Image 1 (cartoon, rainbow, N blue to C red):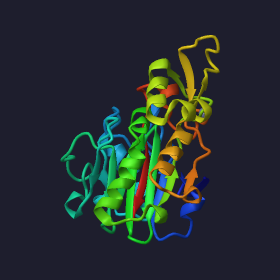
Image 2 (cartoon, rainbow, N blue to C red):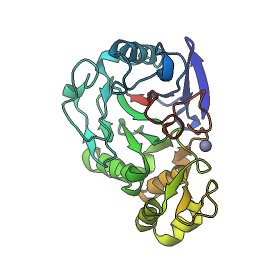
Image 3 (cartoon, rainbow, N blue to C red):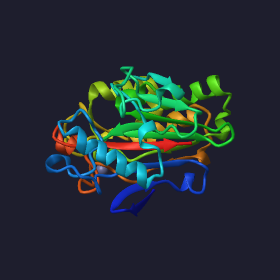
Image 4 (cartoon, rainbow, N blue to C red):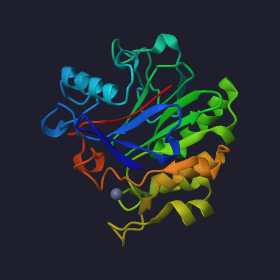
Length: 274
Ligand SMILES: [Zn+2]
């Protein structure tokens, strides 16, 4: 991943999508107008910040990423694996009109100039692009979404609805909490083993807690790796997956982190548009 800077706004890009015919970017907390715990590029409307500030932040991101602010379509994330096909009439959802849906953690579209927006602050943002069929997608993958394999749910829907071939799809696993920061309980570890198989989970995804090494009910979970495994299971080629090296919890000056800041924070967003 690379940090780009334009108009005082910092955002992240992937080598995998370099020079590809798609607009996209992952926000940081740098370059917005919000203050206090929201300083400064808060993109969450429901966090207690003023709507005017958040809208101005969206306008700034739209300008930097060369996207249409009024046509942005937002997710309504509740840790589900619900993925919605976004059509022309969805342009502006959550920006110029209230969201007409609830419980939508993934978005797919083939409509041009219709930016898809998902949110994160430790959870993992996934973005997908099929350059052949001209289809984009974005999804929110926290531990629940990851054991529910929302990345694969999204890819399967791209195949079903738009005739995409997984071999053509480029997949980015965006900035989120890293394996050295993400401690989970034994219950979560069990869900991970159930979803991925005990052997794979224990070999690649889980290890004893570094924060509570004597507590056998605490584990470190590698969500980045888990998201990559999900994409591989969906038939994506390994060379078409790029995984971030930016942890939201390791870099509190660059990102908001739920684990560090709790509810008193802003939200980061991923943007992608044809
Ligand atoms: Zn970290």
